[in-house]
Image (cartoon, rainbow, N blue to C red):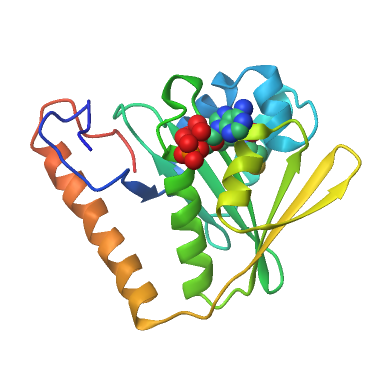
Length: 195
Ligand SMILES: CC(C)(COP(=O)(O)OP(=O)(O)OC[C@H]1O[C@@H](n2cnc3c(N)ncnc32)[C@H](O)[C@@H]1OP(=O)(O)O)[C@@H](O)C(=O)NCCC(=O)NCCS
């Protein structure tokens, strides 16, 4: 698919970037762009701007994996938090309203799954509200087991052990990030200010 921000840049699907603490301001802006209803779907309860700011401030980049997709170099189109539990991970993700329905959430979901599997985690969890039809669809497509608890849905997926192929695929995705970065750097104004 072609990057609108970088004419001519062709990548198989979306390039999902691992994010570093320098991306906190962009993560915050992305989450604050979500309308209140989407924030409720993302966090499971209505959340204030202050709560979101606190959440972003507390993101632990050394323990958890944080991924993002950028269609515009200055903003995140999608954000995924892969929170580490004991021997499992819990996934939370969101996509800007402008960029929905193009597979960004599924690309981030696949990247999170690969990350968790390659580090030996055996389960991936996701908490959804029943009315979150798009997320429930993604969960079902991924073969997740869905437990109904009132208006809540707890989805879980058993992760297979890492293989040479899964490790190689993650390495390849890392190379794609570097290639994407290099191509953006060669196009004026296409490089994000922070990674
Ligand atoms: C849920 C969300 C992440 C989806 O992002 P997205 O980038 O639009 O998702 P994708 O394009 O990757 O995939 C959406 C899929 O859901 C399907 N879908 C969308 N709306 C649907 C609906 N009302 N009913 C059933 N399926 C639906 C799409 O057809 C697509 O499936 P397909 O590729 O098989 O056709 C986004 O809507 C969002 O950020 N919502 C607010 C936050 C949130 O709910 N986060 C999840 C909680 S952890």
